[in-house]
Length: 498
Image (cartoon, rainbow, N blue to C red; front, side):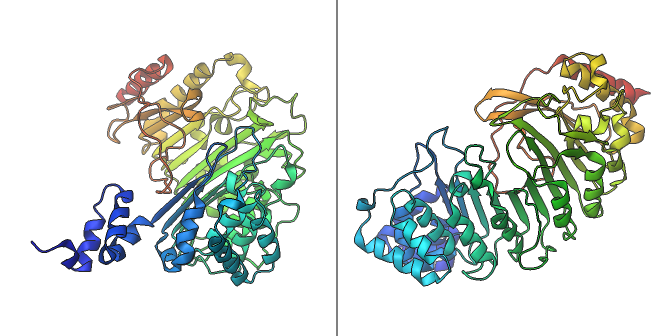
């Protein structure tokens, strides 16, 4: 039998694609130069760096190889730099500079100087300090990414307080460093820093992402700014089809949506807290939000709108005593005219309103909706006048409103075949997430095949997916379901018989 090394490269490349564990390709790269060219594209296709209090990313050996063989950068298809907080510990992770060999230091310094960017001096200074060396190395990895990279994720621990990362991303967006001209998906999510508020001034860093020429999916936490302006003129966002934005105010969101002509999916997380952020919007106006969303009503298939109202580090139920300056107005009744929408997730309260009596939910739901998810965001808040007559139990409130919705499904919402009710859940391995009580059925009979599932909220609805996001496993499937859900199932079936 002829040795594998005599096999045509095209066949070897095809065989490598079937290797179940990418790490298993390391040995062929080390033992055979002829196999290396076929195995390396798979071996370097996905780079994941984890950064936490207990885990310092192994970026040094990675960069040592990449700087010695820069042609490998073209194989980095997906780069994920993950890490969300340090558990209340100091977020500065020092690198022992003595552990870095002289040759590697010289390679890094030469690569930094070669960039010839205006902040080179700052970059070198951070590299020469053990406290900030990791930031400088992370920036060096980003600076050398180019057309080979299709997906990029930068999370809080690599961004928060790391000014070099933001400067490098701006330099790549504005042409000072090799462009990410084939990047399709980017996740740049920092979150608010309640301890060092000066770290939250990252608006210019995040807004530069919209200048990346080929990006279709953007996930970003966008701080507010007193003066929203496009640094290099209005970008062309015709290529943008999916957007996941948190924190950004209504007014600023409108300026982004007005430039999107082909947006299909939008997840908008509206935030309010008791921080010292002077640019938080003082009014939650659902009518205004609908008007802003109208800019994309002719292209949008999927809309997810969430409320994140919290005090300091911890989410809690909004009560006027804590936020006397927050005004709540309007409802989502205007969404009924969004005929193109097929998948919708909104707080139940945004459909029912805050008045003396709740409004029928179906009056605010587009007729072509196939998947509907309702969260209990703000449902038990004092701002909701009508909930006083229902008692404090959220299941009872949901049951009454949704049973009324179910009775009108056959005539008002003929395409609806999936209902998802969201409830806060603590104590799971994913932390403070959401349970999904999901009612699934066929279009012919809305109640047939009804089943209850408990799933993390981050599981995408229907077609809404960024693909490369980590989707939690399905181990939380429930064999039981709450009583209100069983009653709802019976109500739906009775409505179908009428």
